[in-house]
Image 1 (cartoon, rainbow, N blue to C red):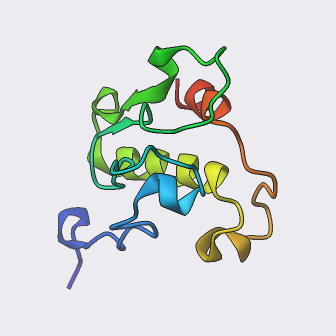
Image 2: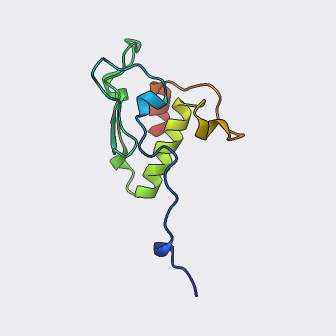
Amino acid sequence: MSITPAAVKPAAARFAGADICRTASLPVREGMRGPQFERDRWDFTVVEQLPRSVAPGVLVWDFTQIRNPRWRVVAKEYLTALCAPDHEEVRALPGAHRVPRTLRTCHDRFL
């Protein structure tokens, strides 16, 4: 019996259900929430204490530009790992970056 690729259920995303700002220890304005991992649009305009040089366009990440939903999840996991290298899911990876990347750097990688 062979298993077709459509029958294989993908593994759950490592950061499923995560508030990205909380995961990356990014401070948000009081009463606001950061973007949620499952959303296809992450809006970081709620983050406080960003340098003035960060353009507003850098703070909104639209994952719908990635047409394949599986690759969308890969991109989200990669960018979350770059922002939160001390997270338990990232810490165990031998080749992971150890210094948190800025939102601007992650946005550049996303593009």
